[in-house]
Length: 316
Length: 207
Ligand SMILES: Cc1cc2nc3c(=O)[nH]c(=O)nc-3n(C[C@H](O)[C@H](O)[C@H](O)COP(=O)(O)OP(=O)(O)OC[C@H]3O[C@@H](n4cnc5c(N)ncnc54)[C@H](O)[C@@H]3O)c2cc1C
Ligand code: SF4
Ligand code: FES
Ligand code: FES
Image 1: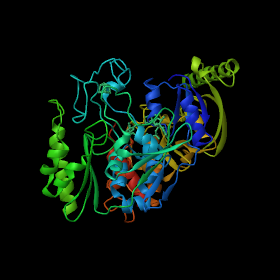
Image 2: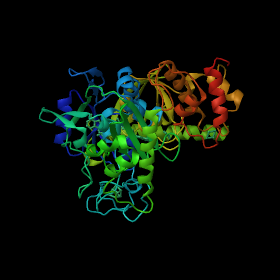
Image 3: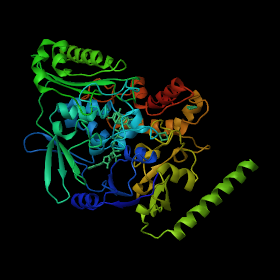
Image 4: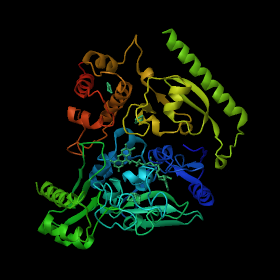
């Protein structure tokens, strides 16, 4: 790990300004992704700004009947919150399907959203990777692609976003609240928060340099049966091959979002009108334009079947 | 034993010398951009004892415990959050001490396996692990026991898990709940079934 100086942020605005002014500075929250990557020298900040003391760890109701979840709320606390469990079950379920008890005790709302890909070549510093070194080339294309993207990928990068929580947030139409270095506040719809790789896979979100996430807000509850089905290589403590977040209403209508298939949580609202006609029907629109390799084509079948299982669970 | 004592002594000397050089030559506000290590003071409580350390900011909580405080019960398996051997309890919650910086624990209360019980007075979980042979090589055991202690507290506090059938109902202990909640602790000897038996015995009050 490279040497770095460490300081505790005093206010969200000062933290944002400090990181914006110093290209070598980074925020640190739970540290479970950043420190992992710093040990491998994939991330090499020379200055860490600790945001844990900023009192962004509350969950509070919003004026319009939703919930505002602070950026520093631990994943365990979000999943265990009574209001989240009752009204946003898919979010609790997605969080509880991720990582381990120990990691969820440290992992934060913002850190989880900003965790980086688990592409094996991104982690292998001996191999070229456009995310680590823009322009270096992508080792995954033509390589080991079983876990990688089948939707929305580019010639520059076929990585997936590994977060489970983000898939549920996408389903629920959450918004990401931030404070920019000049002190202004922004609210970014989750659909626009994560980016597709295009030819700049190193740019992963809509955040500006130094922009600090302060909270995530959920609109008022939408009812329905909530589920998060995660298919992985072992029963627990593994990243998703494919995951399905779903809210299904009595009349068969609802929403579906997928994890493990793209550089961002994957949802196609226009395809959702086909949901009452079953898994095959919605999959046609949801998975349209997929590009697969012989190693990851199974993800399309798996996604359709996992959606089918979610529909059956909602009917039961 | 003599060899072990020598080893420990020499390692302690090396550590002490290393730290002294670090403190003497590096100014308080180290210029990290130039690659110089940055040294900071941090105080926290470990197993009830107040500790103050001067550490390179890069030092993880795990390395602070093992290398600086000589509490070698907590183990380093992977150093990347993947195995749970380094699990300790901080302010009542289990965490992977390998993925946490020591300087981020100012004022915290840390409990390690050494603080749960002693050879003379074992914690009920420690005694149950002995009774049920909840290990083979024992490397993962301190992490397993710290994790299990926190798991039982999490169930009492009503924290749900991936296998909890009804998110709105009261959480009950079961072996399925235990297996899911302990999935962050890998045992390469595969002592899992005896670990489950040991923890279940304590959870169900039979210990
Ligand atoms: C072994 C292992 C297994 C895992 N399995 C899963 C899994 O199955 N599913 C899953 O979803 N996740 C999984 N994870 C990832 C885990 O969820 C993330 O590491 C965690 O959510 C990151 O949160 P953090 O607070 O620790 O982030 P940090 O490591 O502190 O930060 C991550 C990034 O976010 C930035 N950041 C932090 N806070 C803010 C803020 N307020 N504003 C702006 N930027 C900020 C940091 O600068 C950094 O770039 C796993 C991790 C490990 C190590
Ligand atoms: S898929 Fe993306 S992250 Fe993986 S090697 Fe290619 S550029 Fe890097
Ligand atoms: S050493 Fe910390 S999880 Fe493996
Ligand atoms: S007892 Fe050997 S690793 Fe668990």
